[in-house]
Length: 382
Image (cartoon, rainbow, N blue to C red; front, side, top):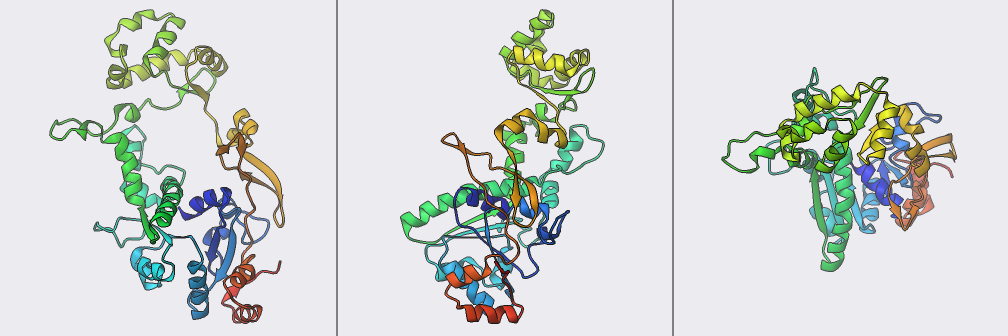
């Protein structure tokens, strides 16, 4: 959530200060790394940020954090509201410190519901919002989670949208702005955006669930030698596709006559496509659908995604030399501004900017040295 949001902001030119405990963010220690504390998850979500390492159980560190917040435009955190209040990071106290602050709180469940005090992680939110059940309903043998931290990342994207809006409002009004993004409500709104479907009209007795997305055959199609992803979707696609395979007769079949009727009979439509596509190899169908201007794609693995011609041509994955980790890969920001990609920074080592940041907050080198000797900060040597 917060890491993705703030990485987008850092890529876009914002100065982002990450506040870490003295043992470091937990993601520093997940996965293989050259240097301890520089795990791949951390490196791929914290590039371009500055970091300050504080033990917030100590009053001196809490005072230092208050000073940082007093000079900031935005505070973003993922503490539950009750926990934030207990730690002195609630909105009322923060806006007293900084009356123009944009306060962004990311947490599990909206504060008007019975789950408001529950802790939350991505898997839990996926389950609560019905994603595993949708997999099973669409034909999977068992419910399962999406193998991407989809709730975390979607909330992070929402936050990256909300913060500039909050900054604009704060500057126009001259008052602090509070924006809350609960994971459950964010993900549920997206799930229901597709699957409220027939229940949109109250009292009509129609079913929940968008049939096209729930068809057991909505999956990559098997070819003679692999798989392919193709969307023969709108009426023009079908008018080009059916004559090209010698099946003009299907144009008169009412099940195929319109987009709405194809959605109603999606299992029949998918079975028809499956029977056709299995007859030829993937390369044949790639050329065939490209020629007809019908959307088509190979089914990549994670490995082949790295080598995909589109990935390579767009510079989405860049290789570069990191000061401590050697040759590394990073995923570039996909936004293109005025025909140019955004430049991206490096992930910081633990405590790399502590001295710089605390100096900027008004602490002297002597005070910082004393805090380091007392073990309540990590201030890495430059």
